Length: 194
Image 1 (spheres, helix red, strand yellow):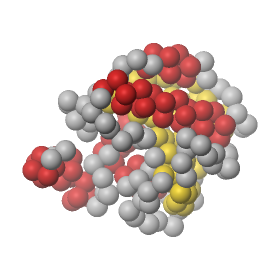
Image 2: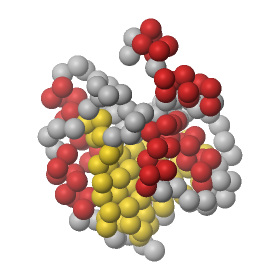
Image 3: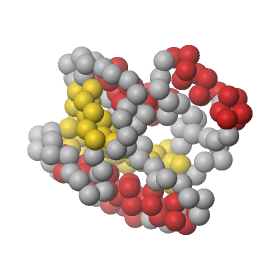
């Protein structure tokens, strides 16, 4: 986004006024209102957390009795007592923590401008996020992740449907209209420990 476009971006201005570190906060807030992602006291794993918009929202919604583990190679830009930052490359490292109620992933590739490559990289990241969720989620847990519409989306949706009782694709209003991003909402993980 060009600097002059950023100044005109409605959600960016709203995020600044509300004290959120990124406009992405409004995407997860909208999905939470519609699908009930977070509850007080939950343990949340946020993959690709930087700059921290999703972790910031999760931190507030789960309250002081909950915990957010924010995973990224780049640090998050806020602090809260119930948020722990883990510097990690999820493509070749595993978070050695489990027992999460929610796994969220706003992971995105460094966009090259070559659509086929960027979309392939996004599906790779989404599949990796789902693989991690399968290892760390408790039974009944929730998984939310970003996708770029295109090849591979039907495959990941099919895979999710075999593991969660509720699976839905959505595009929040806070997503830019020209963006191909979609979000996969998966609730009630059918496997994992109770």
